[in-house]
Length: 113
Length: 108
Image (cartoon, rainbow over all chains, first blue to last red; front, side, top):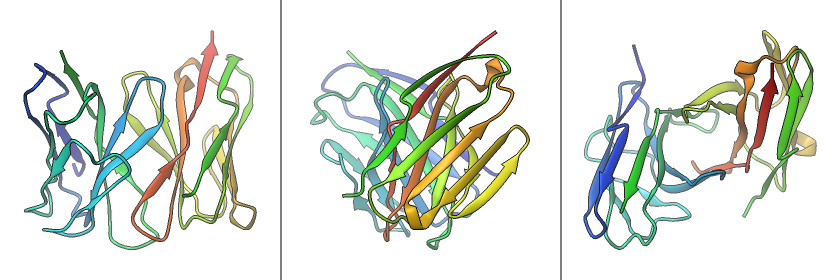
């Protein structure tokens, strides 16, 4: 079945360590996105990528980095520079074009202590 | 930037009741979607509805793009409808803007 796979589901790290969250899609979608959600809040855009080897900063990109070496993969690295990394991270994708709905993975809950 | 306001922010219903959730945009958006986030955090697509009206079982949605709002109707609510409902719209770029959500609790 086609879909978006995020792994792991839960992730625990010590403060000061970088951590990479995986996002893989087999929907053949061109665009991919990373969102952050804090408890009781909405979704905020971290980074997005429209095509391979290209990506743009969203509203809260500081302390995060991404790569898009393959169409199906869009990993997110939470660096030690991110001051408050504990959150729920959601990856999404869509086909190219302005009339394209967004599809989400099941998310990764990151806890940094 | 574009602002998205959802109302009401919180809603408690008895099972079987009907409700209307609203989403207002401060400017025009290209697309509009409604999502349901379940208690496990999964975001489920409910409707992709740039304009017009769609129905899916007990749920229906209407978007009036010229007036920059959308409505989500839930009829005969069930406890499994509990969770958070988000609307989201896209600007001229690939950037989607999300509302702050309506938190719904349906009581048995």
